Length: 462
Image (tube, rainbow, N blue to C red; front, top):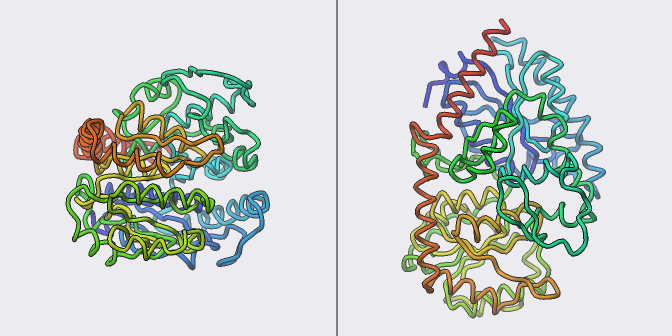
């Protein structure tokens, strides 16, 4: 890692994620990669998230800017939050840039979460560069782009069978992102996702947390139209190329993990004998689905770690913990990378958020996919049918995944012949992920080119 003196002698980059954990993690990790290439990087958290954040990083400066809310303040709806969020964040960013420009290292680039395209106007008005960072796959981005520009007309026709889109596999309706196949589902959030593409033609770069070989076909199509930079998988270096010093965790977390409990428990288990169950920081399952998951885990006869956030634990079946003491461990949060990297874990039962998907691919862990919403349905399609690194559980007519289905899926991955093929494929993608971020790999080259092109822009401006 370069020294502080070396970093601050380069140009200054401000990075602003949308304030949820699955967006904070990859954008902070990208910030570390930029810092390792000699740039000074400031990473922005928001006032409403500042107090719960567990911070731990020394190569990137972390600052807090206003999103219109005070620490811990909550609003009743997404619409209400966004009404506060947009003007407050825009004003805060402008002030941060202005203050930074009075120092020896003025801002040259704003890397902003693609969910906040309005932020691009600020650097452009100030004569700076702006680059959206996409925390979703290129496939999902291409689908949203098609819908935003009405190339894919919404709402979709009833009874539509197989859907064919450029450079992608055939999709069933429920393979598409949830905001596409059900436009009545959280319309404000759906609009947020579709409007990521409202001004991308004005950006000098589009940065994606993926790697070339993972999405080669759709990337070829996208690169024919936009200046795409693939820089992933963006996970801590210790788990891939090991080229960043002391980089064993993302560095910012909304939840405090049960580190010792998970590690000690896993150390006592045989290789590939544990199912790790987690549905991320946002998903909220109903009590009936929680009951079916518990029944499925019992029937699978596998050891398991189940992450259930504190706010969700009242939905757990009565006596589950007591009944599964020998087989299971229920925790309210854990270091997911540390668990997935443990040799005892043989299956990741997950909602398939993009960050979690990339973590499992990078560590070679087979997945049992139970998508909930947003891009998770599309990620699951690729996991099961394109990359063939997992299986997707099936819902019944009422939309519930039953325990029998969960147990069958877990057993097939961990014991069956199909599971052997899945594990081979998972290990292959693990090697390709490492290759992409390592010296000479496609993602590492793209980051180097990104930094070099930014230096050229800086030189032209001066």
